Length: 373
Ligand code: SF4
Ligand code: SF4
Image 1: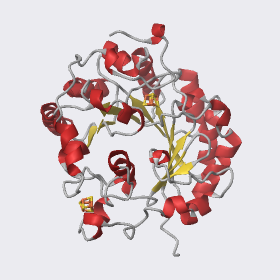
Image 2: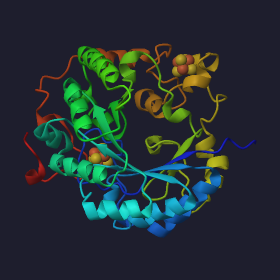
Image 3: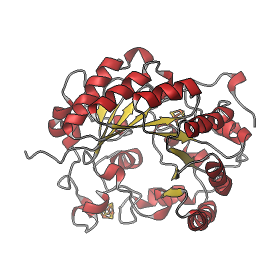
């Protein structure tokens, strides 16, 4: 077997714990307990191995990575291995001293999640009062002169506010705003009925983003991640299975994408047992859907198979029960009617701003933590 090209990016899920309870969180329904998390020493070893393998960029994510008191040591380990670090955070816990310690350790940039432009709606969607902390976190990042990005998961409850969300990002000093239409994995799959937007909402939001993009050209970059249920086009998930990046879960499990742990037949390799080099090059998990040879059905002879890699394996499994089928988001898939039916289904009759519509990511928020917006 010839070795695949090396990965360049690693998503480090340092913990699944998080003060927020976003109903679209891509973490698995079964969250890793804190007692099973890798130590900072083990993360340092993983990052050294990753650099040797070719990784140049890591997202330090979670859950909420700031819940780890040893985060600065992990940043320093990445920095000394020569890996660029970006912190992906809800902003809760990003005080000025914490920011300063992380910047001194070598942190290069921060990506802040935002649920809505309005404080009450943001807190309601997050299931936790966190908007004020986010605003403060953005200021702290700016003061530290690190690049700030905003990431916003778009769904029925906030798509109509996309203009105000862009205003918020500009006011907070974001250089880049990622407007990612919700992808249905983990908790988002659980909450799909509540989160699915209408086609009208999407086309209005798309127009708004296009005009704001022209207005902000050269100052703030707007990224629009397509709503694949609605576009009839499969997304090139992760740039291909085991092609450019890997995800290390809090307990050391290594996955080709953050959602792949939900595939029942995947034997998830672990950095506690195996080297990252073996996992990337030789593990059955990383070779299962690598390249194009595994493809059958319409993908097998399709000219786009090297462009979108047949779409997403996790979505194929979630919708059809078979991860090797063509992603039903593709209009050429024999299962595309499944996606069309979901995209055209009428919204439920709960008002969009009603918190009862969500199953919040566990552990369930205590009553006092919920914001009623
Ligand atoms: S999506 Fe929300 S709940 Fe999930 S890790 Fe991010 S901030 Fe926490
Ligand atoms: S048939 Fe497969 S390779 Fe072709 S466009 Fe659809 S998902 Fe992509």
